[in-house]
Length: 333
Image (cartoon, rainbow, N blue to C red):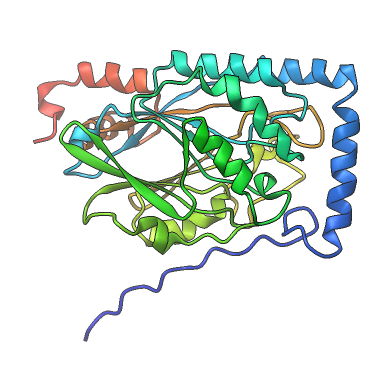
């Protein structure tokens, strides 16, 4: 009997008063929240609170195992910057300092995961000087988030500014990155809430067996990406809950439970970053801001580390030190 391949799942469209598309009755609430946010942005105390939040910015070193046969990509280092929400308690000088710190990590790629702005289209101009701080050898790439769509489906001004300043926007499209003697398919989709994501278009051009990384602002798109054999999806949107009490957040921005950190289906990985900025209120509790640094690791490294530590996630430095001390009897053949 012929076994039929499993039908690809479809990511659920976000619904609800706070998570759904800004149309109809929700638009009035959205405008009210924007008004509150803009009023708070003028209060000096809120900027002091956000400076305290920014001082806790983390840049964790993470590793992502490559499939067998893609070992030449090992060592490729990615900085993932999401949910900056520029203009909301965060100005030009703040961005310059954050991006300076990112560049100190010497990433090969800088990937922006959406929500670069907060409530005003002019906020994208705050990135002009800050982007000059970043000089990754393989470039900078971005996808839009729901806040980048605040003024409707036409985000051509947002896109033009970024591309004029060295950031390629991957809106349902992909690009091949050559590293050593192998290639990586880097692609991105439009926002799941406010846009029109098209994974088939984003993967058009990917070669058989080629490692692929997908940028999707909303993490719930992972169900589609995993079924399409995408190796790694990078997402934001949730802020890690932004406010967590007793380890839980009162607000949920993922219907599938993708709130923060790693999620794995077989050999397919999703990382949900907590992001850099805030929305509505200039506070974070139990969910500090982060710019994760993700290094691709060859399959042999993965086998060694799993033999030693049972498949847990470890930092790049820890992986390197473990590999250096592996007895010959444990090295994979």
